[in-house]
Amino acid sequence: MNAVLDVRDLRVHYETMQGDVIAVNGVSFSVGEGETLGLVGESGSGKSTVAMAILRLTSPPGRIVDGSVRVNGEDFLSLQDAALRARRWRDIALIPQGSMNSLNPVMRVRHQIADAIEAHEGRQSRAALKARIVRLLDLVQLPARVCDLYPHELSGGMKQRVCIAMAIALEPALIIADEPTSALDVVVQRTVAQTLLEVKKRLNSSMILIGHDMALQAQLVDRIAVMFAGNIVEIGSVRDLFNSPQHPYTRHLIASIPSIRERKPLLVKEFRTPDLRDRRPTPPLVEVSPGHLVATWDSTDDDHDDAERVNADV
Image 1 (cartoon, rainbow, N blue to C red):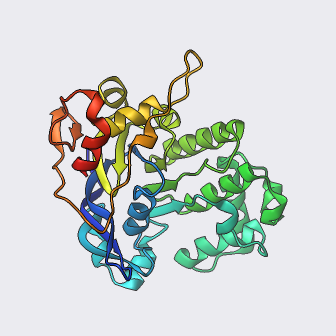
Image 2 (tube, one colour; image 1 turned 90 degrees about the vertical axis):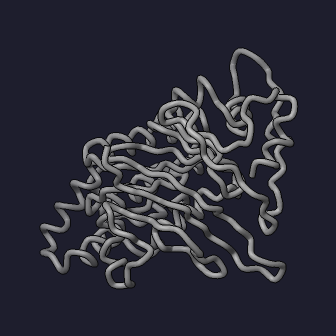
């Protein structure tokens, strides 16, 4: 399978008065053609920082200090500003976490989608542009009347689907969806997630789906990369990670999924994020079975020492 995205040794630091916070610590992964990769972990693990770095949207005091990000073989980190603007949205697009904060509250939906299209393709006739926008809205199961509405006139699920329509306007090869259902109720989450997968399939795009809900990820993605404290600690197919999780942090994430059959103690609190300014040596990702990699010095120890080993491993 050809890689649409190939990330190698990506490192992102945030400068502080007490020293650099190492938010992303040498992350490497790839996404194949038509593949959906889940990037999971708790808040602060570095998931969104990875996404912003891929898009070259890291803001000060953050900075990319090392690594490469190749989209269809082209290194995004070496592109000049004009070339980068031309590639964004056309080759790689973002569906943001907070749709209300991403949409302009004083512009109608059609004007916001039109801006994205015309910024890359130049001025177009009003009739042709509106017809194209209506088709995009239809793809995400929104009626044509949404064209003339303002964001505040839409529900949370409708706003999120408008953001999906904007992201796919130029049919990008890769879509990054940054927790696109996190602010929605369970019923709307399912609708938006299904819409996202149907659009991806129709466009034959690849996708990175960022989130922390392991149960939702299991239903939507092909492979999962687990992040903890700026590191990818395990990566593999959904089947491999759920049937045979190798890293203690992965096991506890899976154990945190609520069950209707039994009451279980919440164990994730045992994992203390280490000081990201003081990095210890990190173990390499080792292949334990075809396509299943884990970063731990010893993944065969008993579970009773899991919390301590996680902190030592990262």
